[in-house]
Length: 259
Image (cartoon, rainbow, N blue to C red; front, side, top):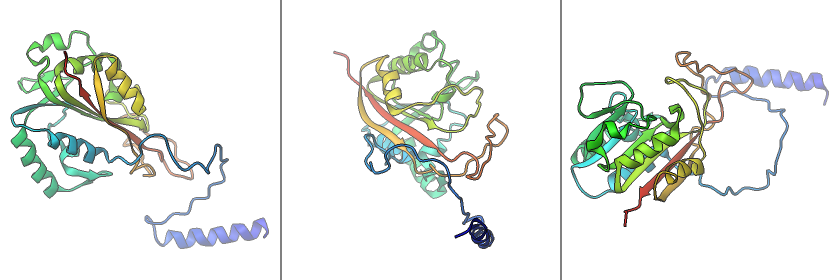
């Protein structure tokens, strides 16, 4: 088959595909392949749904009036934790039902960089060595500490992990959702990407923990994800689109009781 004929066939397919946009787009992949494609089993988990894992762990804890800390709280709505079924699909009815369950079990507190008069917000720089000293009443207080897409924005995440460990009570859990592979995005900075072992190591350097769940959510791996331009987050576009390799690390650790 000649190059000219192939070119014509491809052109026809493209024209047909254009009738079905945005659902259908032909991508010609002529890039090199490296590695062993016959090896079909990974040595780490890639079947996690980050919201489902976090929700299950939060609601599985027994008790009421428990203390919950939302790291990087923003509006305090917990939209992702309580309303996303998976892969950015929000369900308002699902959210409202989960919000009622959450309020029956937990006392909500937020953690944010900017100062506020709200006594439910632990304000300040989580990467500051004196952060916990500035909030002594919360040392060893929290049953659950939850962060979703926050740790990549910490300039000194090892200090933040130490501070969170001090705020967590023995037997409490820390749930960390953070990019392993995602485009650059400033809020206000963007410093790190993490493997599941990297998150485990950060916290285990600060205290004694048991790994409850650890791995990756790759359900949105092939989303054609461009930035908004408001966070210095625009990436180059090629034949495959914008950013096309999004993985989220999901790690749930339980603080081991002190003897």
